[in-house]
Amino acid sequence: MPKTMAVLGSALFFVVAPLVLAGFVPWWITHWEFRPAFFGFELTRAIGLMLIIAGVPGVVDSFARFALLGLGTPAPIAPTQRLVVTGLYRYVRNPIYVGVSAVIFGQALLFGDWRLLWYAALLWLFFHVFVLVYEEPTLKQTFGAQYEDLRANVPRWVPRLTPWRVP
Image (cartoon, one colour):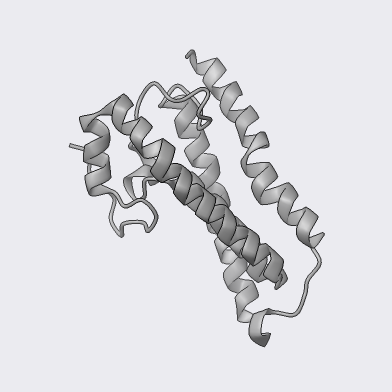
């Protein structure tokens, strides 16, 4: 896929997936209205804000890497031509799912909304099942030993403390 198409496809998928999942749906659930802080601890709001601040740039960076380095998109219908093993992918295999989940969990904490917390948990469960059933087998089939090397050295969900050095 030409780089221009990869960038446009990634931008379109960004609007369709992360902006809907982590923007529109949380707004629809909460209308950005603050409820009492979870368990009366205002610190949960600060933790929520930190999760949002950490998640958004990670998602944006990962989408850019898919388009510019992988020459494709995160969408299954227009996958990358190259396995992306730079940036946050040196710490965790699924930085987009981790980032989107962090943003939604962060919003739940920030707004003190249990409904959003349940939504975040169910969405992460969906991501987990999708990764196990579709994404990992597809990546293994497409990229073979290169993906197996990444899989052996980079965790699926909990980031490494130090970046993996690609051999």
